[in-house]
Amino acid sequence: MICSILLLIILTSCVSGTFVVNVTQTSYQAEENHDITLEWTFTTNPHSSSNSLNIFCELLTDLRPSVLFHLHEGVEVPESQDEQFAGRVQWDKDVLREGRLRLHVSRLRTEDSGLYKCVVITSQGSNSGRCWLNVTARDRPEPETPNTTSPPQPESRRRIGLYCGLGLIASAALLGFCFCLSSLCLPTEQDFYSDKSHSSAGGSLETVSSTS
Image 1 (cartoon, rainbow, N blue to C red):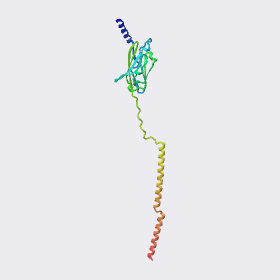
Image 2 (tube, helix red, strand yellow):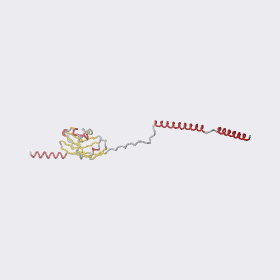
Image 3 (cartoon, rainbow, N blue to C red):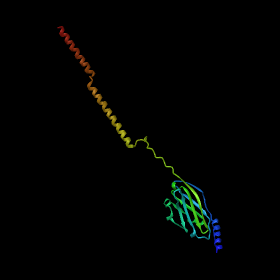
Image 4 (tube, rainbow, N blue to C red):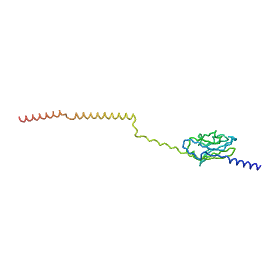
């Protein structure tokens, strides 16, 4: 009995040693609001059933781990997924039979940056693989400054033309008024000579009177 237990432990250790989980990339770089695909590969056995496959992926942070993806006995468990990734993670079921785990993460956020770890457990054994994701903030466009030298609009042009026309009419009227006023106030040349002749006649009469 003891020999059987020891043999089982040795065989389990040997099987676990041959089961490997790798990452296709050790580091990923992406921009905020973009999508990315994280991929792991693991050893497969054509005779094993997918019901014996368990996968647990999480984001390791200083505060607490955030569950990215959970597969239990070949069935996804969305309830285990952290709220941070809710509705943003899709996985390829077809390639999973080939020993490939592909997770598509959409609408990346800067807080998605960090170390991702996936643990794969099968009837052959268990192992894990890690990769790093860095999400950079998207450049924000600078606010447009208002153009203070923009050309006047058609309505403004019409108003300016109206004001200019009214100004010209007022100036012409003022000039006409001034001209009429000056004509009435200043003596004409005929009045000037008429007054002069009357003055001369009066002087002559006075001279004749005195002589007499």
